[in-house]
Amino acid sequence: MLHLIAFEDSDSPLARQCLALYRDGDVCVFADGGALVAADFPLRGPGYLLEGGAPAARPAALETIDHARFVDLMAEHGPVTSWYP
Image 1 (cartoon, rainbow, N blue to C red):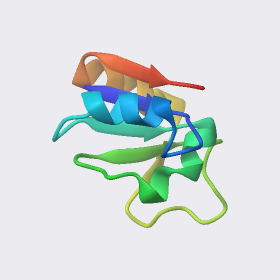
Image 2 (image 1 turned 90 degrees about the vertical axis):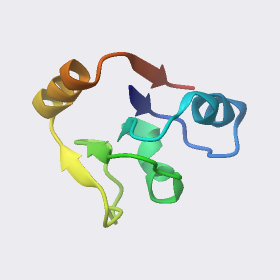
Image 3 (image 1 turned 180 degrees about the vertical axis):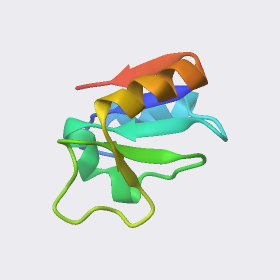
Image 4 (image 1 turned 30 degrees about the vertical axis):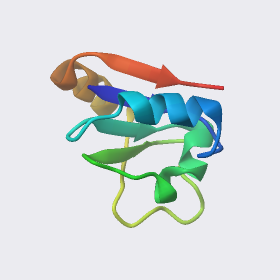
């Protein structure tokens, strides 16, 4: 499963809902405000920053991807959840 994460607060109810569905091996793509929580998110699988949402200091473990690569990831990983406030 792929999770598009755009919430800005890792302690929010939305973040808790996301983490309840998040499983080992799931892919996370951080977009928009999600870039603010990317460095602290408890990754259990691959993680990426969507271009345009990257913070000034990119978390070292995360590659920045463009929209074409994002579409490829969606096709590869099946169901997608979207977590926007």
